[in-house]
Structures are given as structure tokens and as C-alpha cells.
Image (cartoon, rainbow, N blue to C red):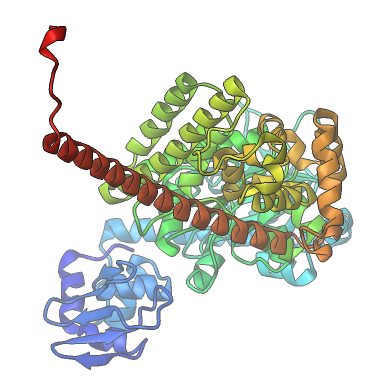
Amino acid sequence: MKYPHAFIEQVKGHVRLSDVIGARIPLKKHGREYQACCPFHHEKTPSFTVNDTKSFYHCFGCGAHGDAITFVMEYEKRTYPEAIESLAQEAGIPLPPPDARMAQKYAKESDAHALMQAASRWFTQQLYASVGHTARTYLHKRGITPEMTALFGIGYAPQHREGLKYALAQQGFTEHAMMDLGLLIKIDDKPSYDRFRGRVMFPIHRTDGVLVGFGGRLLEASDHAPKYLNSPETWLFKKQELLFHMHQVRKIAHDAPAIVVVEGYTDALSLYAHGIPYAVAPLGTAFGEQHLQLLWKHHPNPILCFDGDKAGQKAMLRAVEIILPHLTPTRLMRFCGLPSGEDPDSFIRTNGKAAFEALMQRALNISDVLWNMHIASKNISSPEALATAEELLMQDVARINDAGLKKRLSNALSNRLWHVSKQMQRSASYAMTGKPALHASLAVPTTQRCEQHPLAKLLNQAMCVMMLYPSLLHESEVEQMLTTWDWSVSAYHRWVAHLLSHPQWWNDERGALYRHMQSHDSVGAQSLQRHYAQKIVPSWLLDGEHREEALSMLHKIRDKVAYYTHEHEIRTKVQHEHEVEHLYEMIKMQQKEKNQHPSHHDDSLI
């Protein structure tokens, strides 16, 4: 319900901000202001301030800012009218009577909500009747418990063409009202009939918990009906403004590691059934800007989790286009990729909660996604191709409106591009000369290169780990090792190009990947067997069951390589400076000797 501006100002004028917030979280007096640990993000040192004089609160940690109404909305997850009503009650101010126009609108909404609730009750009754046996069996097979069925209000729409229509009519609801909310379909002058038939029914709520529509999943495959069917667009049901399960997730969002966006509400239900209660889903429509703003209202860094197929990849690319202009340092987005052919439901049912949580922990930030889109996924084999990819990459970065975030991403990606360019130069030099492009102080005889070079053992260790756990190659930091390190000093220098040009092999089992590599370089395969026998990697890694530990080992190897490279650059620079200084001293000495003993020319020779 909409309230007059004068009434809203009256409510705000009768409440003191520190009293409103202090009644909900502990505040501590600090000079003219109050301080507390922010209730909107986790922190140990207070950065949340309340200023009664200026009537606003502000958090210097997450940027949360607003007045008394805003605080009640955000902290208690209330709508704007609900927050005003709550504050008016606290202040002892009676609510104003609605005007005629608002009373008519309120009555229409109340009637619509009553109708939707009646429809939901009827669907629930059908689920537990004899006609709902097939639907109950389907839910059981999907791991949806009776407790979940009750929590989500899941029901069943029988095949009867007019079952819902007659049931609601007996309760006094008109056919026009049912059609207005999309529960019935009417074609020309033919009798109207139920929109949902032969489907498991999922109620869909607004963020404030109001039931506004339904989604139905067909139980028996049909060539004439879609597998999933949602309520049509109405004045009450607007798909672009809704996310399935958001009305529940918003209550736990502040304590959840993320809000996870999946493609369908059955995915969200499956994740809930396996202990991931913070998943939401669009309603048969592409992820849009309104969805984005709704997510950020409740979490600063949600995760988009798309299906591992071509359609999922396209959905991710569309989402990136939408997200880029709206990113800020406090409003970010992560992207979680699934293996090919998997969706969240199938993945968690097969692999369990821990595996899905591990996927979320490895979710990519926007810089990694842009890198993969324009660089890692392309076959860049020339400076010209790299220049083209760089231009497209930086065009996407330029679409970010926040100047600070844009600058940081641009610098980080430019640094990664420099490393790729450097690796490309080394590869070109090696291809032309057959020798690695190394500083003279690092050069060793070719026959001994793989055994004596200071970095050889670290690089060999890294490749041994990658071959044991091929899926690690999908990690951005591991892929960066392949693209930026100078592998020419490793026993596996011939393998890198094959691995980069065949990313589909990364999904194979370790034995299959080994056979791929063996067919391209038998010498490298022999080295691999020898290194495993020499226990160049811990023996407990060999069973393939310690993926996280293997990734941690690669991180340690990366740090050691970076440290050695940095030390070598410093030593090279110092050595060069000493050589220049020594040369300068020699020139000075020669010049001094020349001045002390000038040469005497023989005139007879002239």
C-alpha cells in the first residue's frame, strides 16, 4: 500500500535512528555518533556508524547506507510499506485511511492473493489424493522429501481440463478473475480450461513472500506441450522481476557464502535437498538486469551457475554482457562452470554436497571469465591474433562504468597479456633456433637441459601433478602456468602445446590423458614414469583422490617458480650493472694511460 509523503515524513520525524537500530543490534556511543559491527557483512572491527543529527547510517566496510526505513527494509527483509508500518507502530502513529483509488487497488491485490492461495491449496490437495500418486513417486525419485514438499507448497495439477476451474468457482471466484491471473486459457468463443494439467506444481512468490504465480513440470513427455510451463505475464506475475525461492533465500543471505543462481527451479530444489539452501532460479527467461539488481540487494557477490552445455555457455556470455556495466567494487559476480553435460541437479546427485561446494569455491571472478572468453579459449599462435584478442578483451573491460574497478581489471589483464606475449616470443625463438631463449647465465648444454636447469625439477613436478589430476587444467591459475612458464627447460616441453591445443583432453581420466601425450612424445612419457618412480611427487597423490591437495601443491610450486624468477631477474640486473661499471672503469684506465704516454709519430713515414 502506498502512503502519503507527509505521513512518511511524520513517521521519520518521530523516530530516532539510533533507537530504531539500537533495538535490533547493539550500538556503542562514539563521540556524537554510534558505532557497531555492520549487520550487513561479516567484520571484527566496527565500521558501521549511526548519525542521529544527519539521520543516516553508513558502513565504511561494505558501503551500506540509508535512513530508518532503509535499515528496517534491509535488516528485517521487509517491503517499503511494511517498513513504514513497522516504524509507525513503534512510534505510536496510527496509519492513515487509504484514499478511494488506493483502496480499490488494495482490494484488487487482496482478491488476487486470495485466489492464488486457493489455487495453491487445491493443487496440494490433488497431490495427496489418489490422482497424485504418480506425482508423489516423481518427487520421491528426485529426492524431494515430504518436508520439502510442504515447505515449498508443491502440488499437482491433474489431467482434468476443468478441475481447477470448477473447484475455484465453487469457492466464489469468477472465471474472469481466474483468466486475469493466467490460471485459465480461453481460445475464441470456446469454453475456457485449466492452463496447468498433468504437471507437478511449484508456487512462485515475490521477494516479500506473496504468491503471484506457478511453475509446472510435465510428468509425461509430450510433443505437443512444453516440459516446463510458467504462469503467463500478468499485472501480478512479472518474470523479469522474480527469482524462484528468493523469498526464502533473502532471510539467510547475510549468513550464506553466496546466493547461487541456477537455470531452473528443479535445480534449486535439488540443491536445497542436498543441503544448499541458498539457490534461486529465473523463471524460464534469460537472466536480466532486474534479476541482477535483486541479487545485489541481498548479497554483494553472488554466483551464476550455468549448465555445462552449449546453451549454458551462451547464457553465461549473455549474462556477462548484462553484468559488466553495473559492476562496482562492492557489487561483483562470480561464475561457476559445470562439467560438460552436467546441470546442478545431476552434478550434486552424483557427486554430493561437498563436491558442489568445492565447485563454488573455485568460481571464477569477472576478470578470469573475460580472460577465458577472449584469450584462454582461443588458439592464439601469432602476435596478430594476440593483438586482436587483446582489443576485444579491453573493449569488454571498457564497458565497466566504475572507474576504479575498470582500472584495476585493465592493469591485471594487461599484466597477464604481457606474460603471454613473453611466452610467445620464447616459443618463437625456440622454434627458429631449437634452443630456449634464456639468459646466458642460465644456459646449459642441451642434452643436460632437463636435468640441470634450476627450474627443471619444479616444472617437472607441476606436470606430474597435472597428469594425475587433468581436471585441474580447467583452473585459471593452472592454465596460466601452461601459458606463461618457460617449459623449454622441462622434460615435458613438447607436451605444453598439445595440452593447450586440445582442452577437451582435460576432461579425460588421467590414464586417457597419458595415452594422448604418449602418442605425441614417447620420451616424455618415459620421463613421466621415471619421475613417478623417483617419487618426484608424494606417493599418496598417485591414487587420484586428493584433488584439493594437488591444487595446493601446484600453488606452492607456482610461488617457488615466481620467487626464483624474481631472484634471477634481480641477480641478472645486478650482474649487468657490475659489468657496465667494470667496462666503464676499464675505459677510464685506458684513457688515463693514453694521456700519460702519448704516441710519437715518425715523420719519415709521412
